[in-house]
Amino acid sequence: MATDKELSDFLASVEKRAFKRTAYTVRDDDAALDIVQDAMIRLAEKYADRPAAELPLLFQRILSNATMDWFRRRKVRSAVESNFSTFEGGADDEDFNLLELLETQDGSLGAEGADDQASRAQMLHVIEHEVAQLPARQREAFLLRYWEELDVAETAEVMGCSEGSVKTHCSRAVHALAKALRAKGIAP
Image (tube, rainbow, N blue to C red; front, side, top):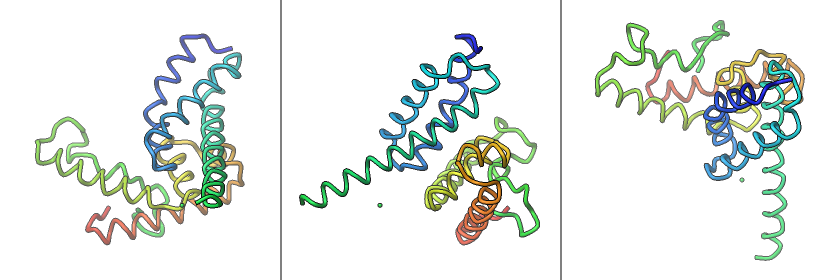
């Protein structure tokens, strides 16, 4: 059983990444904040009695389900309203990580000047925009694998699909991102 401190520390450690992932998915910061908060509350209310090691996968699954619920509710609302008046380094490079593009030459994040920081911010903005343009399942697989650093089996469990589907979604996402980023002059 996770202690209150372990649960609190876990939620504090995932809140920013969960918000960013959800914001990419729903493309609405306010809705993303609500979804993440609801997922955190559900985890605390229903699964606080679970071991701390189980919390990450449980939370990811709860967050994915909450996001899908949001889309379902939005679809129903849209139907009702409408009745009344939507990178890759190369083909062989399976370990490509977009975030590696953002390291400074000496490998640190803090040893850069203002021009480097501005360049990094612009590049991050471009990458975030391109990730947001991915189809929903590709974006979800990509963010779970590379942002949340889940392995293929964990990602498949969270997404409720096969490991093969996860690999396919990730591969397509990486290819699409690489193509879009190259077109904008960003190369790995």
